[in-house]
Amino acid sequence: MTFRRFLIKRIVIAFLLTLVSVSIIFVTLRALPGTPFSSLVASGGLSGEQVAELEAQYGLNEPIYVQYVKYIQSLLTLNFGYSIAESRPVSAIIYPRLLNTLVLLVPALITTAIVSSIAGLYAGWNRGSAFEQGSIVVTTFFRSTPVFVTGIFLLVIFAYQLGIFPAFGMRSPLDNPQGAIETYFAVDFAKHYFLPFVATVLYYSGDFLLLARNSVIERKGSAFLTLHRAKGLTEREQLARAGRNSMLPLVTYFALRMGMLFQGVITLEVVFAWPGIGRTLVQAINQQDYPTVQAAVFIMALAVIVMNLLADVMYAKIDPTVEEGDL
Amino acid sequence: MSTLNMDTDTAKDRLGDLWKRSRRTALFVLEDNAAKLGVAILAAFTFLGIFGPELAPYEPIEHTMRTEDGGIMRMSEPNDAAPLGTTTYGKDVLSQFLEGARPTFIVGFFGGIGTGIIGFLVGLVSGYFGGRVDEALMRLTDLTFSLPFLPMALLVLTFVTPSIALITAVIVAFFWKMPARVIRSEVLTVKERTFVKSARASGAGHFRTMFLHVAPNVLGIGFLYTAYAVAWAIAGQASLAFLGFGDPTTTSWGRMLRQVFASGGMREAWWWVFPPAIGIAAVTTAVFLVGRAFEEVVNPELRGDE
Image (cartoon, rainbow over all chains, first blue to last red; front, side):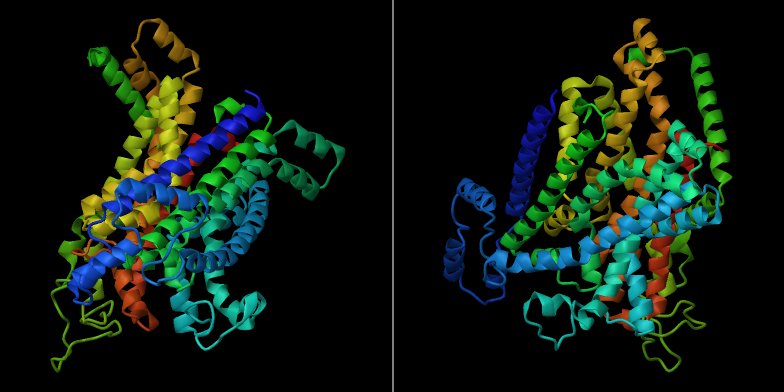
């Protein structure tokens, strides 16, 4: 199979996967009993006719296949409809939250990828050292503990007991910054940013550390390193060359992690009350706000599919020993 | 199942061999100090999971702790009557912790084993037969990979009342894909080896070849991922409970964290936060410590130049 054919096949599969996933999301949501408005009748806020009128307004009274076609159409144009709970366009709610999540996670992931990979290379090179043993146990702890539990530990110790950092949200309640620069480049923001950032960095550190370590260990006996040693390169120079050859699993793993980022942080955002997409999803589910739920889950699923595609393609492109047909 | 018939001696021999091999592996794993610690924690957790509720000094939800003058003992620091303090509602934290071990254990145990078995079978069949079967099963795995666990599980749990069995089922439904992929790629290499081909050539059926010749060689990885799945199941259940989608009728560690978080008790009541948080962290970490030591044994490339 040529690379082009492989690429086309992968893209088609990714597209079909997206279609099936959004259909599953649609069916799941429609299978829920009642509509977002039925609770309003029960509480006496609205009469039956008013609810019917509202449902017509949101297109909920149309046949299910019409709703489905409209739903797919609107997703293709990235138009997520109107939020039922907040009566404004879902995109106006989702995009700022998405940005908040990315602002938290992307720097955290990049930091941990760089720092832990270097630590891992070093640990693998010095096999059996105290540093290797210690770093593995510590990162195993943070990697296997659910991220919200780590968050709770940080919160209780540094925010509530020691009072060093604020515990809640993204900025102080009285702050009202205008524009992106004032929002994201402020001391107050940095203070709120610190704990969730640290929790994310710690959570993802273990995987990168172990991958880098194993990768170096596997290469340690290789002939090319013996050659470098014979040439008289210092330990550090040898490690740099072994490290360069260990990049492949790290790079693909980074792509995969980026894709799964959103789903991993739902609980983290709830713990720190970070106004991101995960917390929005939980709130929308509790309010039965279908359009917002659909949009949030769609974005999360899409992220995974796109990043998986990217990882596969990168893997096939970088590693000459991988046959495209194997993937 | 006639293809699986074999005489008792061969069966005994095979089992004995398997037993010897696993014993040797276990001894290897236990040479690692971190793994020893992990095994100890897991043993303690299993004990708590089985006997915890019987050890609880009070009924964790019904019983309200009283101070000497008869008032409700709210948010009290650890004292003689309540060694781990009390909650906002005047309940004994120690009793809740002991009671909460059981649902955590049940979901972890059955969720992990279910994930392991389904993932193992899918991976085995997919890798062994290849071709269309493989294509179909792997696209199914891709699909479950693209449906994110937490959001989808939250959706499912909004319209059915969560129960322990249901949560376990949801966890298995979302996690089997991980072992499946790894087992498949292992099977792909094993099935090309000579002994598998000679088994086929000497007339063994697909079923027999798959389970008697291929499966034993990927069993180690299967166990490893079953162990990891236990940790994932516990983490998954705790996350669901923390977000308020746990079984509302039982006390689990995740639900304790939910209550201390939602009631704002976290601000001061560290004694209420730490027991369930440390419990969850210790158990999931223990699984990975043992798993990693095991990985070190089954992955020969990691033995390196020792």
